[in-house]
Image (cartoon, rainbow, N blue to C red):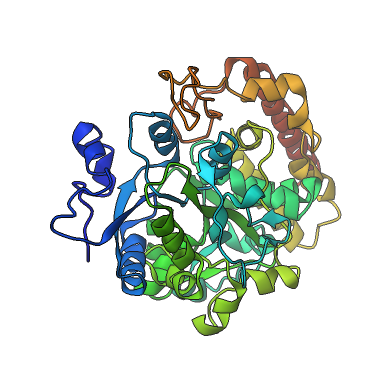
Length: 471
């Protein structure tokens, strides 16, 4: 395998400086290797990069790949610094489409590739960028990470959909990421409330929260050990475990979801546009797309035509979407919405032990045939204290929408040489589990306290009703 001239792909961030930047200069090292270098800016994992490196250099022997490993926010800062040599391609694996942000600022150029076999969208999610400035290169879906042996041993119902996990059988048998401390957790809330509607979604989330162990990390170990036979998760982790461990499996529920896409695009300042276009063409080709499920961190291809060759066990999101299984589609909405949802859920689970106890009493009464008596108590536990569009209120939205980070820039920063002004800074959203994401914004605290009080009132009402019914 041709190795990067950098100390390591992930080590680039630590070795950031003149030496690392010089390694990106066109022609570096060509005395020893006359193949033309193509520099790829990416945050894909090493195994994925190795697979694509071997395949690309076999298909295009005139080129050799160099990788610059940077997470998207760091990549954006790097690109905005005009003193840095530009990579040729940006291939991103991240929830937010940062390529679209940079395309609006003039950093990308059209792909200029044939789109045969590449759909422009999956459901409501666009795959093709406006102006041909980028294209989705892989998809990630929501699913359940399961230990089928533990499910069988504990005589649990098969988790085919969310409502199964809300039932009494899964009390204490389910793990989920705490939405306030884990970035992906807030997406789960969005999937539930969009797939089942606002009222139905929160009803499910309340019951699931009563059953679940909320965790900041360690979901994988909980499922592998069988302590929690099921975890709510994106599919990359269960797919990876399924390749190496049995009986670890993943289930795409009937109310499933594509939660994000990764993208690829050509940078405007590419030193070798032909090489950049060749790599993007390979990534989006049938051969390249077929590599995605083979990596240590498997992802879903964006070409429907490759799924036939991946085996019957391979989930096909295009077939699922056509069949109505994937009703939810991710959208880039107002900054702060995910944080507001996470804060609302945190209010629901502020007294987790009480929530578990109340749901246990409801389930026990219903199992005893007293469902009519405890129906009001169930409704109290399921009731959301705010309307579906609560986060759109400007005062609340501004409270959860942090100010844009100022980016220091010298004249000429960005693709417009001689502009003499700072480049447009990225939107710095408060994200649970990320730096500065654990503190509730000061302006949001009055709203959060109202939500907490409303959840407490709901749970107190449920307790009074259960006590009155002697349930």
